[in-house]
Length: 187
Image (cartoon, rainbow, N blue to C red):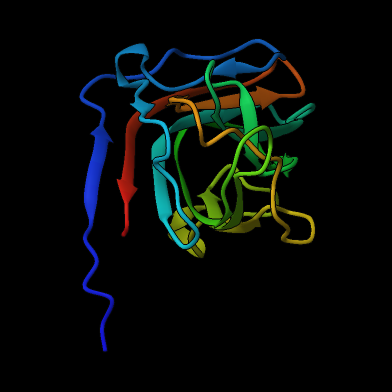
């Protein structure tokens, strides 16, 4: 028998996030789109889907890497998912599109760091290492996290939880802007 679950869009952006150019970790979503989930929101099996897209640039000589963290917790800074380092193209890219699609499935709930999630996702862009031009082969994609899939760090399900997404680039030779941001509760 079917679970008879629902799909609920929790937030969908209508503005751009900040354009990030520094080699530092920073929130990449629009400030107005930071939401809070109530205490005891998660249960084992509850899934959240994060879809982000925008533009990215990288330099030819020092493209570096990018990294995305999905954060929860009372301050929205506890990293519950980390893509790990995503290598950028050694061919210069200027304002090319990118897409990050991640689903987090709650595995356990509780206080302290007991609420944990198992991730599955993909990052796609012409800015990914070894991607051909779209006219000759399309965009590259990387499954995320780039290491072995595993349950991420935990958060506290007994308090309200802020939702935020952070971006880090290793060198200040590129830029990233989020144009679309959506979080859906899948059940």
